[in-house]
Amino acid sequence: MESSANSDKMSHITLLREHGLRITPQRLAMSTLLLARPAHTTPQQAYEVLRNHFPSLSLNTVYLTLAQFETSGLLQRFQACGRTIFDSNTDPHDHICCTHCGLISDIPEPGRAQLPLSLSKWKISGESRTWTGTCPDCLNLQNH
Ligand SMILES: [Zn+2]
Ligand SMILES: [Zn+2]
View 1 (cartoon, helix red, strand yellow):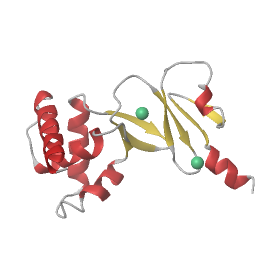
View 2 (view 1 turned 90 degrees about the horizontal axis):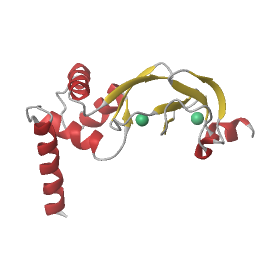
View 3 (view 1 turned 30 degrees about the vertical axis):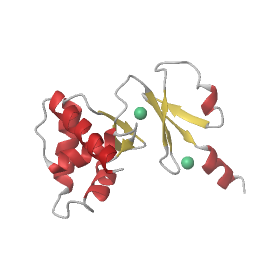
């Protein structure tokens, strides 16, 4: 287990270096948190996880680091349901956001006229660059 955790750490150090970022413990933790899997996070969410490990960390530092990651091409930023979201999936794609619970899902092919079948249970209420709607879980709650 330990050796796989170490090689995981090494791969994040390599990734940061390849993107021209100096290695700091905070950047490494943020890289591990955000880039290990495709993830959407708000600065507030990242802050809440990271401050467990770095009690002196400020929300402002988290925001700046996210912005540096964005500039370096590790993350992309978008607005959904009135919030700023950072996305570790940097391939071009659209998003759908549930206006009730804030759930965000990827729409893999941007600019398509119809939602993919996997999202057919959404009730659509709008579309800009980010689609909005009610997710199946919230629809279930409303119908009961
Ligand atoms: Zn929902
Ligand atoms: Zn996304």
